[in-house]
Image 1 (tube, one colour):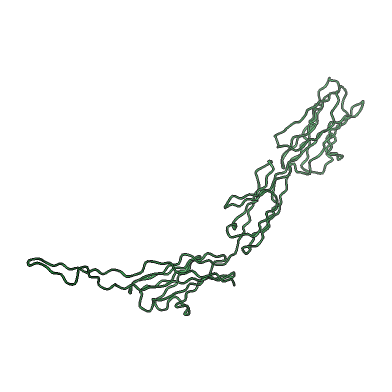
Image 2 (tube, one colour):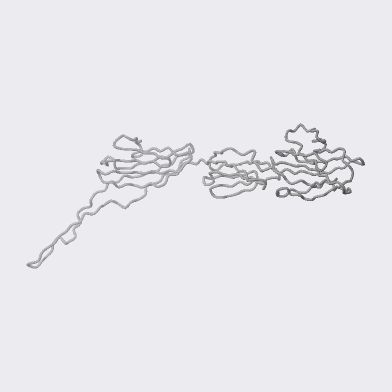
Length: 354
């Protein structure tokens, strides 16, 4: 009879099935079996046999068994293992096979086919390597910090072979290798989602994301004076970038706080800006206005003006005294022009930390 084995079994992934088989071939003389060998990890290939060897004997087999390390799995038809995943497939003069279903990392190790003849015992050994897909086991939760702080993110992964771990900023594409990502004196441009990706070539990469929120004080921009005539609507706009979002307040002549619904005013606040609307401008609406934006990190203010436009004095386009010959006609015309000054930006205030 003959038995056939691989010195190293294929590198299997989790939940694979492992078939261990001993085959008989009567009438052939015995040959020696090589000792089991080991090798470094390599990318998995389906049923990759590193080396095959064959043993043949011309004596009858009296006993046969499969062992895992020193534990007997099956001895003939008798099951010694209490593991329900292990079962007997074939026990005949030509073959002795068992099957291990749903292979996991604890199944890795040395397997021995042992058989007894009338003359002496024989063994054939194989070594099973189990590959485990890379999986993230621990990752930092969402982080909220003030601008200028240091940030440290952690992403831990397991797998076999040892997986790689890479951090990537989704917005800018910045990458960093390793479990730890250290950011020194973080700024508002570095806020956003960061993705941890781990892979080892066994299965698809595993990934998870962490959101970093960076708080910073308000900065007011995009403020302009307005030049509405009496009886027309007017709009003053104040925009501020801040995290958390800024709260807005409006003042007239730097002393009277304005509220919507009074004196024909409406105030509309959005996430990043506030608008002061006047439906029908009257003389009392003209003057200096202030916009104040604040959050827990600071205050910023800006001044704007509502400026009244008035016609210029009549501009005479012909000399006041003109001498004409008899029979000629004199044409005189005048022109009113808008005396409103050119548009000028409002004056931005200076940020005041709280």
